[in-house]
Image (cartoon, rainbow, N blue to C red; front, side):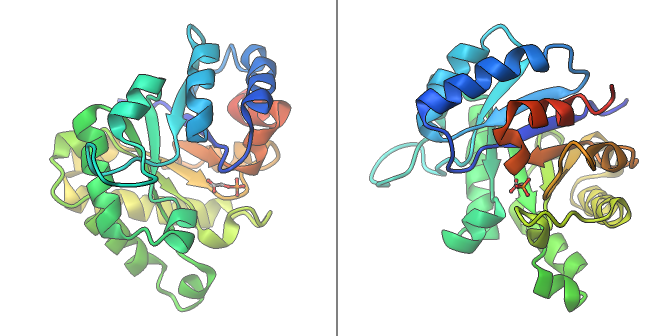
Length: 251
Ligand code: PGA
C-alpha cells in the first residue's frame, strides 16, 4: 500500500494568536487541493485558535511537544489531554532543538511517545545527526540509537502509527539542505532500522519525512526519492505562499 505523504509545518516559537490567524486564513485557500496530508504544528497558545480556524478544512493541527505524565506536579508541561482538548491531532516529539536546549533524551522521547500513542495523538518523532557526528562518520550509529531507544517497547501496530522526521541538525534553519541522495540514503537506513525494531511490513508502512531547510525550490527533488514521504518544514512554514508551494510540490 502506498504511503500518503505528509507535509507538516513546525512553527517553533513563532506566531502570536493574531499572527497565527492571519497566516492560517491566507494558507487555507492555497492548500485546499493538496494531494498530500497537511499539518501545522504550532505553539501551545495557538492550538485552540488554529484548530477552530482549520475545522472542516484539509489542514490538521499539531503541538510541538507533550508531557509524558498524565497530570500533576510538572510545572511548565502540557498534557496530552490538554492538547487533545485544545484540538491537536499531531505532536512533534524529540525535535533537535528540544534535545539541544532542553535536555531531551532518547529516554524522555520514548516516555512522551508512549503517552502520545496511549492518548491517541499522532506522533512525529524527530531524529538526526549533528555536523560533528556526520563528519566523524557516526550518522548511522546515532540515528540507530535514537530510533531503537526512542521507539523502545512499542508494538508493531504502534510503530506503524508513528511518523519519523529525519532532520540532519546541520541542515535545520541553516539554508543548507541535505542532498536528495544524502536524505534518501539516511531515510532508507531509518526504514531498515524500523524493520529490525518491528518487521519489514510495518517499516514499509511508516511515513518518514525529511526536515532541514526544505523549501519550494528543493521539495520536488527530495520528494521524488523513493523513501521520503514528506517534510517537516520550519522557516518556510511561516509564510503562507512558501508553505503552500511546498505542500503543492506535485503541481
Ligand atoms: P527549517 O526547520 O525548515 O527551518 O530548517 C525544520 C525543523 O526544524 O523542523
